Length: 108
Image (cartoon, rainbow, N blue to C red; front, side, top):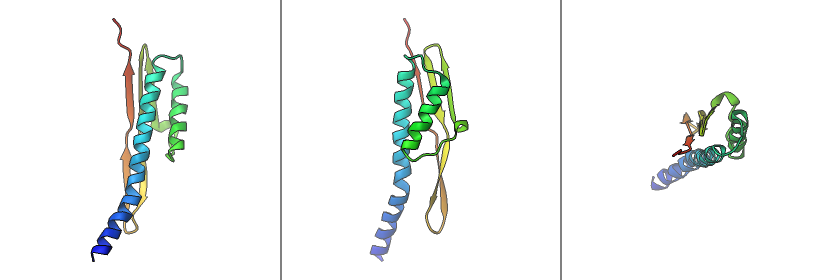
């Protein structure tokens, strides 16, 4: 019985941990991009394409309508919204993620 419970926990960990790790990596990438974009002449569309490209490297499929970018005078706001379906054999679970970052320059 203990072996079955232990095996079930391992199975759940193998199914549920990778999407969270990928989301953490995407969040870190978005934060770095927001920080860099504040000081460069990159456009909102270029930022959006960069976020989509970064997501793809982590195995996350993000269509352009799920990535919102707003760039103003010294500010950059990036937000993504996506769901990852996870098949747990008896049930399918959808994990919802919303990585985002905001960066503004401090003027004195």
